[in-house]
Length: 93
Image 1: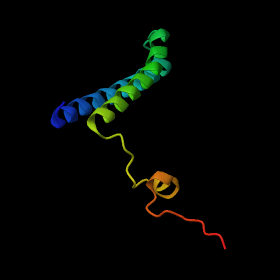
Image 2: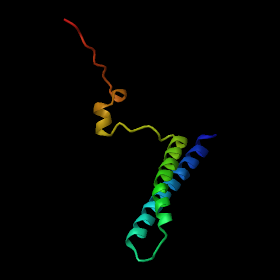
Image 3: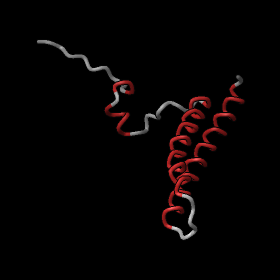
């Protein structure tokens, strides 16, 4: 797959995953607090849609090449051994 096609497919999947997650959360909230008498069966499915949306998001990130964590995150930069620039060597005296 060409890089441009991979970027487009990745962006589409990430956008679709975001929409599914937002839609699931929105439906759950509206079903709980509204007077519309929406079926509770769908609100349980809406909670499940958060996980489906997250999987779509992760698949899109993987295909689009955005699966790596940026080193600008403080925790990763300071505590993740894979992201440290200096190697600490223990010397015995």
